[in-house]
Amino acid sequence: MKLLSLIDTTSFKLMTLYLGLFLLSFLAIGITVYLLTTHTLKQQLKNTIETEATLLKAEYDSSGLAELKKEIGEAGVSVSHTLREYGVVNQHGELIAGNFGDFKPLAGWQIIRRGTESINYDEAPPNLYVRVIALPNAMWLAVGQDGDYIQEAGEAIIQAFIWGLALVIFLGAGGGLYLSHTFLRKIQRITQSTQAIIAGDLQHRLPVAKNRDELDKLAVLLNRMLDKIGVLIDNVQQVSNDIAHDLRTPISHLQFRLEDAVKRDLSAAQYKERIAFAIEEVDGILNTFSALLRISQIESGSRRSGFKTVNLSEIVLAVIDALCPVAEEQGKTISADIDPDVKLTGDKELLTQLAFNLLENAITHTPENTQIKLSLHSSGTQAEFIVADSGSGIAEEHRQKVFQRFYRLEQSRTTPGNGLGLSIVAAIVELHGAKIVLADNHPGLNIVIHFCNDPVMAQ
Image 1 (cartoon, rainbow, N blue to C red):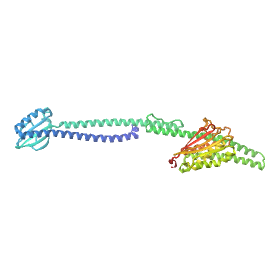
Image 2 (spheres, rainbow, N blue to C red):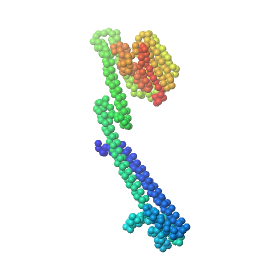
Image 3 (tube, rainbow, N blue to C red):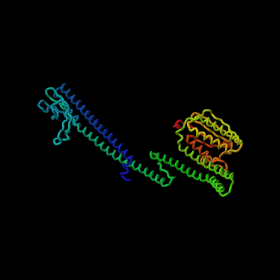
Image 4 (cartoon, helix red, strand yellow):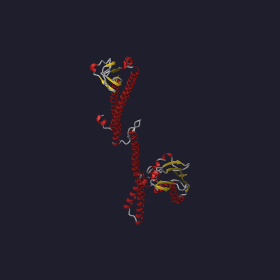
């Protein structure tokens, strides 16, 4: 994998940005630590020297020069390990006490920097922080102490931060290259999988790692999308086959009747009979295509933009009133248990067709003396619509297949219909975010639809 490819990745660029910000922060912290440390050490050193010089001046004020000399001698011996120096000079600059006299006769703080060529490091430091105090009789007292350890501490801090910066740069760049390499490797696997899918392997799916990072989560969603596309493609293939199979028979009948009418010398009444049959067959074919187009329109989701609050109770009662005479003609009874004013957000026309198709199926595909019951109940935002009958029911292995286009339990296909009624119902249920369940009614079939009256569906 080329280095330029790694550097061009988004992960490496983000790593570089964050590494730069971290280095700036690290540098700011280093400067702050350096300044605070050196300042604190200098202040501590000055406080120590100030205290010592004040005590010596107090000794001079109380006991005189002789006692001051004695005190300086004793102090020089006791603190020799700190490289502290003392000196007392007179008005002529002559050293009269201590071992240090090369300071200026000015009260305050002085830093004496001695040349390395004239200094024995075993005896005296090259840099002294000196506190000078004026004494009576035009004399000057100086107390000095080595300050090189402050500079050494600062240099140690600088060196530590330089090594820290180097380590951060090394680890940051290494980590960035590693993350970029991992990122590119995942992208390559996704690219290879995508190319395989484009080449025609529709069962291929994008790889998903166990750690499930952002790319893996995206791959999961894309795999779900591919699964959905696969189902749609299978449906298209199934619909194509079913259309060819279901329309073949009526078109063949139509062709046979028309050819027979052309070959034979028929009367006007017989020609009219043949034409009426042809029109009937064409109407059936057109109804099939209309149902397919309606399913496609529903599945597109375009109708959702026109959702409004509708009264499902009124819709169901209207459908019952319309089909009740048909059921009575066939010796079947319809009963209803409908809660009043069950309202939900949806498409009134489609919900009417849903109830109509379910009740019509219950009437058409059940034997005489069947009891059909419609129930509608609501609880909070939930509504439950049930169509139950006491007919022969549907075997469990067929319950999901009946929602497929053109699927019919009656293989002989002598019963009127095109096998699209429940397909339209399934599309309407999905459009409204509902769920449909087929269950055994002991005996018969129990169709249950669960609606969730979610206002978001109206948007």
